[in-house]
View (cartoon, rainbow, N blue to C red):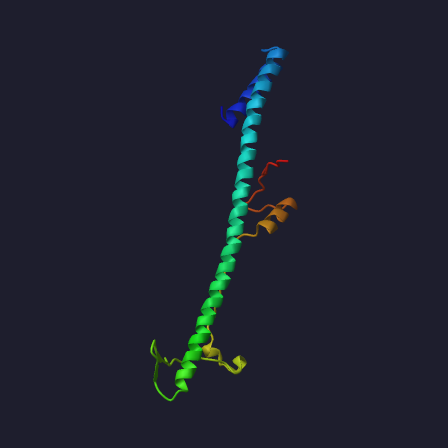
Length: 166
């Protein structure tokens, strides 16, 4: 029996007892059996929750390790960038366009980039607007309004239940 069937069976037996169709002993035996089956299902769900929480802890640990790996990767990229800039500096100041060794040929690549001495002096025409607007209803404000007795079209308060396992 699935959980909904168990709950329906309990309600049916309870109604039959209230109408006098079954005696107290049959009622007690039936309810006990149904509640044992329901208890087994709830215990199985509790086990699944515990097992999934263990998985979640592992995933969180892996995410932390990934963040550390990303940080180390970024440091390695920055180190490469600094070393390449240094090689470019050395070649640029060597008086030649290329420096040859037994293992490598070093050269420089010229590029340009914009830097600012005082950004406040830059004319408005050289600015671009970056606006990211995400419009979504504020559930907190809507909940407060409904609890204060206000009507909010298109929204309502729904009751949710969350099981607590101790």
